[in-house]
Length: 401
Image (cartoon, rainbow, N blue to C red; front, side, top):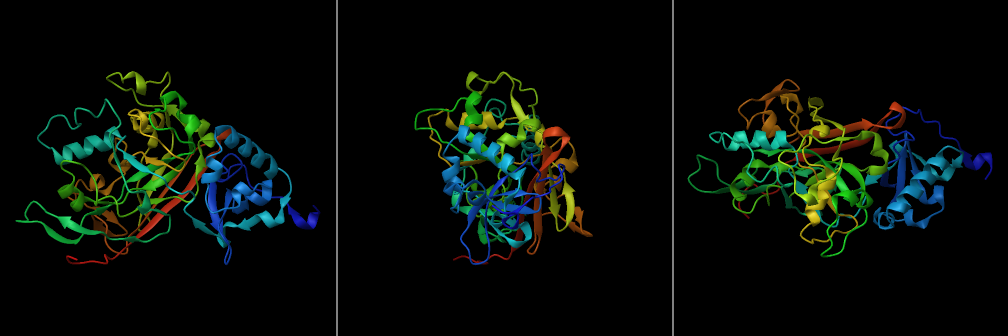
């Protein structure tokens, strides 16, 4: 290649999308098919062109993820080396010129409930007369439910206000209509790169061989629909209308510096959940509501680790597949300003917060919520996750259909 066909990318070492991050995503240029790229500073670099590998020439990360952990390590090393030299000019695009897509085909989706602070807050809200806010099983296993993978959308997709059946405490009978208690849940999502066979659990100590990377995850929640439906089988229509993920998948390999011990787990967990050093992640999230940051949830406070969630998900023999996604549940810390859901932040609507000069409880049509996050990177740097952005639009059905 000649100088006219190559370019040297000069990205500061402390850029949130610097050399220590290199997340994977799927992008497209106007009139062209989607392809896999990496974000490097303000550039999106086409990986098929950079590496000469057609596994990146398609519209999904799944074929690459399915190649396994050793291959992920090899490619990360190759991309890092290639970006330290001149790269093909044809591989480089401005981040402002591309459209970003759902980065992987979601196979299955499970949502957990891994924050002790969130679970305790909801226990106090819903069971105020019970001196113990946590349910008896909560500290023995990562509680979760199976969600609807087809409703997971990429950042920037509008969120249609769901309609459904609900019954408030003063309603004599159930009614149908748009949700009036629409909420968010600030979470992280963990992407399974290589699956496991039916009947073969994934040991907690081997989770990192299966987990490819991490995305931001907003589990939009219709609290009024959820409250009426969830007994006895749990969340369904109050959750399944939409969940937003960030377009960039930060590799778990990029998060070595972000690993921290989980909070002390008492009572002692059963052997299948035990690790010599249970690890969580020191990731700082922020929740922006109509342009104003209203919460900064700390993922380091999460009680259950990603490895324990995957171990529990598979311990009964349930299989996993490339592209499976499991989310952490709402990330909340001990302080009010660290609560990752508006039902907590406003204490069920009883304590409104001021957003852009207005007193607010739950989401109104036209509201926009953006999740962002950063984590420690190598050499004292920080790495970014981009954003998970969604704007609420009016329900399509306002009456029974």
